[in-house]
Image (spheres, helix red, strand yellow):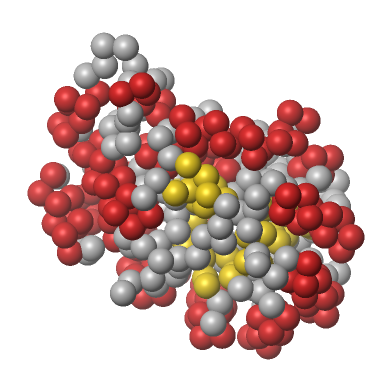
Length: 378
Ligand code: 5AD
Ligand code: FES
């Protein structure tokens, strides 16, 4: 396995067989020492007492992989961690994806929308806290017409011309994407969820198609957005082969950001009885992504922080370099429930920024106040 990992690092690519072998390795139980299990960035002071984690690191393929991923991440981004302030501005959604807690079929969810003024006060507060990127995320909510979105986008850019603005509002026509871009949006996040047709149909109702999802992603790229895509790890029906096709699709799309997190089940969805995705596989895929896409922005996602209290710290050690804390008003946070037990939804989380600062430095990295644009290949 070490040989395969070295080859992947050197060539930033590997044969299908090689990738499948790495994806399919037996999964390790991550011991409860949490972040210290991962060797890459351990500082002497972080090591558990009498630890031999470093000495034996190379013997465990996942830890070796994490070490290589961390080395590559440091070569390109040093110890910098970029933060994006996430504003979840509507939990209304016209779609009915089988995995998602805010699907239209979930009748037991209280729905909300933030006003433009509320959104602007989130960005103003976020700016004071040092955020230089804002992500407006929401369900596919027709109440927010293109004109309204453009108005919100241009108002935010007017108030914060030095900030990047990211939209994450789902599938739209090319003309809409163009209008948002012209109004000032810089980036767009749209996970492809899976690049395998059959798997896509297992996750989505028949009115949605992988073809349209891909059309959206290519439109966004052509228009000039910095694009983010990605998958859930361990979604029902996912196999090493579908993951391989995700990696191949991502190589073709060549996005600036790749977001992955474990699939987490939600009681009021058709997938209520499905199992959660795996922490260990999510971390492994993060490291593989870092070696395949050395320059990519890779978030340690909220889902990763939800499946394990130190999930995001471990994600950083396995190659991730972005965090997306919640800037939404605390009283609506629990309503943006894509999955259960989501972190940062209680009163104590009003100050995610401070909490993150401590978490990031405990893992050996530091948050920077910057837009955090992708460092493209030279
Ligand atoms: N578990 C984990 N991630 C989820 N998402 C949606 N529902 C879930 C879930 N149950 C992810 C999807 C979507 C992103 C906004 O959140 O990948 O693209
Ligand atoms: Fe939100 Fe810690 S990051 S409470």
